[in-house]
Image 1 (tube, helix red, strand yellow):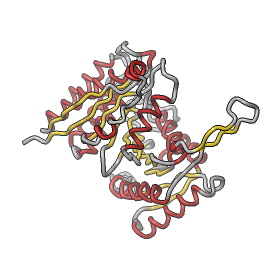
Image 2 (cartoon, rainbow, N blue to C red):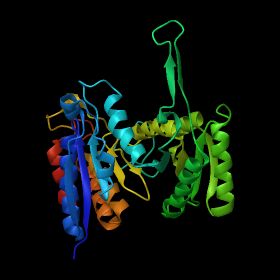
Image 3 (cartoon, one colour):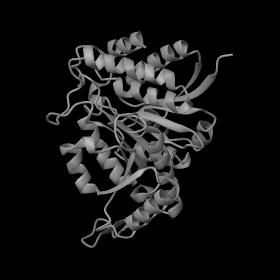
Image 4 (cartoon, one colour):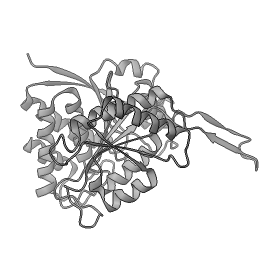
Length: 360
């Protein structure tokens, strides 16, 4: 009997429904070929629902999501809703309430995709960022005093517990052991690099660095360990991205460096990520926003959403189907698309989805 995976689909705002449509198209083909089934259930969380009801996310949503094997997300962000309301009310709330404490961001330059980095190719831009996803300044601890006066004070605290740091590091070490460059046959070592700012943020990153080396020495002596300051990391991501294998870092720094990484791999139209709870339900999404100016025009690039679906299948254990999708995407980028930019691909959103689905 074919295995069935229950997937919650949140298409969201703007071009989200368009890219999710193509992602689902590809997922269904991969499922049929792979001999498994997808039970897709749609949810209307997003800007339109908020404008109608005043509610970003119902209180029952997180409990409902726990009934699924994974969540497939399109985009969140509506031009008629103040920035922060939907992002914090839907994305961050789901991440925190579902304890999706790992954000996984593969950074791979596919064939045929242009990068702004001179003389760099797919062999050079091939690494992964593991971002801690539950702590840091994103917890919202802090406040504003005397708002609107000359004496206004704003405080937002970077907070981490040892337990949060340890569980992220352990996951990153295990991932490096399984998926590092040596494990994939493309490098001499499996290397995990901690990215922080130990020379200035001396409390939080002292905790991170001590935990990193203690765990590495005790439990992962086969993993090569390195440390980089976050500002130096940004510089070397541009100059020598081939140096990186697996990076692990805190929430804020991870948020910043993964956008820099995205542009080196061709932009947000190809970048996908996963918000993971290794013991619970995880959520997969394209890194691009809702792009409201392109809504309904059928010109947006759906490859990031398709790649997010690929990551989702890999996460639930359908690795063969995931590899089939990735191979299809690489063939399309390498032989068909003129550009990854909206309206300049040489194909419509629907046609790009068709091209990938045909190759799967």
